[in-house]
Image 1 (tube, helix red, strand yellow):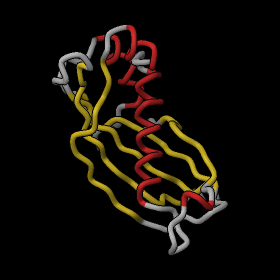
Image 2: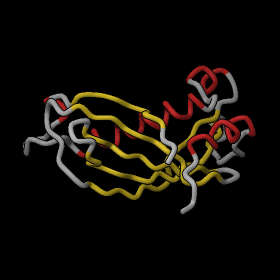
Image 3: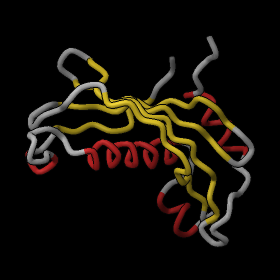
Image 4: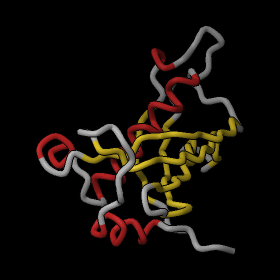
Length: 141
């Protein structure tokens, strides 16, 4: 399966809750960073969002599976692939992996719409973005 490493970090003690493991909000923050990283690789850069086409993906649905706890000091990476490309939406799979042992600790699927930042409505995904996205598209099995 083609995937892009869209985020890397080490779990900081401030990322952890009073139970001693990484807080749920940090899992989703990593995935949010991952979406911005992959959309930038597709040509939807921060500059393009601010001064160009004014388009960005926005999450409208998330299905998540927490598989293992992560603690301060764990090196982690996020691998992002694309499940589906629609006319106005794209579905991303994110896998948060603990580097030690390459164990998937968290997996989520984000259904995102292409959002016009001017109208705040769904917009068509530009052709150049589609063409670049195909390299991370999972093949049906």
